[in-house]
Length: 266
Image 1: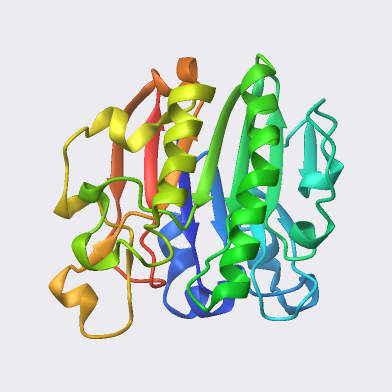
Image 2: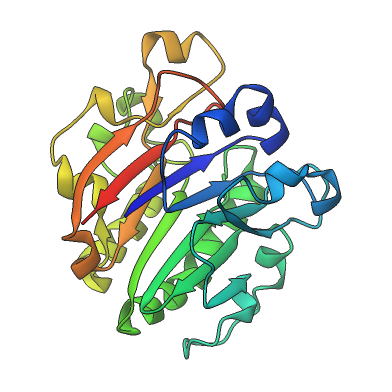
């Protein structure tokens, strides 16, 4: 089973850069996307469902903003759009503001759940950083309930957090910046150590540094100099994580400021 996660920074922009032609060469079973930046009316037939795939989306209410999607070869048994539509028995809290930004979609196939998740960035200012912390706090009970559900689950997406110093080039200069704040990193540590989720990339590559990056700023020739961050993840329940045998960060073409992250599971 091959699963790809990719922040597209606009599905129409990615299309113009050859994303869909590349996708057809990958033989992926499931493709998770973030930052679609479109509504259904903006999408071509290929964007809605490429040849050989079913397509499902959770669009943001704001035009040209956020939004997540999943393409899958097999038709899912169930599709959950938004955190507020989950039937898991986690502590109830209002998810309306999160769901209005189109940040969560889940497809269920038998005992397997695949989630496309786009967590907020806080880099634009204090208000958005406060929203990010609020989202992290409210989504944790949902992730705890997913882990406790007994299902095989993989959460794919742009988490907007670099977990360890080896997950970004300039860790010393970013300790006070969104995406590498101690509170954000502690949230991920808690997700792994206490809740029991597994960072699939790090399970396969415990010490990889410069080759692990999935996002580069458009400023200062960051991509050319490989001044990157690892922001895109596949986070799995333990038994599913054990089935991961290989991963690739695809950099031969650029469809976005993020690189697609590919994992093959047995």
